[in-house]
Length: 236
Image 1 (tube, rainbow, N blue to C red):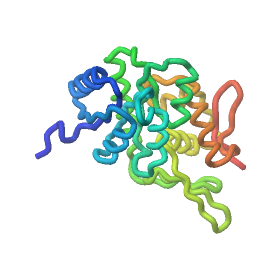
Image 2 (image 1 turned 45 degrees about the horizontal axis):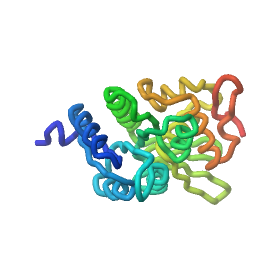
Image 3 (image 1 turned 45 degrees about the vertical axis):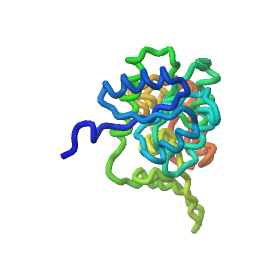
């Protein structure tokens, strides 16, 4: 019979500082989670392939392969790209935050954050994954098929079908907007619905993810409503 720990979510912690690894491991396991660790990006990729974690905590400044390049590698891997990534780093500037989101991170926290805040952020991201793991569904709108079961978008052009794969949060944001075409959502509502109310992310997070979606499918599908937020186009 499985124990509670057998069913616990697994967090991969990636940092080149042993004291940070020890601190996070202790507090996450105390919170009922399982952990595996790596000290650089190369090790992180190997550990992720071996353990298929439910969430990845990723430092930026690391030897061999830094966190930004590692995050980009995760998002390019069809077997790992769906895993939520929390960047936990000493780089705290807005430019650094946006760079982290640009390469595919779902959330970004400074290392100076209280341990309780970090653990709460991890749990909130994991709850978001559980909330969005629903039965298979296929949303067809305009020339797009958005398959939530496979995290896959198919763009049709005549008889041609192009498969497009997205990191988890980009996909979830696209699916959420496309589920209510014509309805305008402000940034805070999108953050609450897609990231969760207890996840600490800034408004620019939505803008960055919308830009990345547009780069993949084109700019006509998601409409900017100036001074308010975004909507999915009712007509093209």
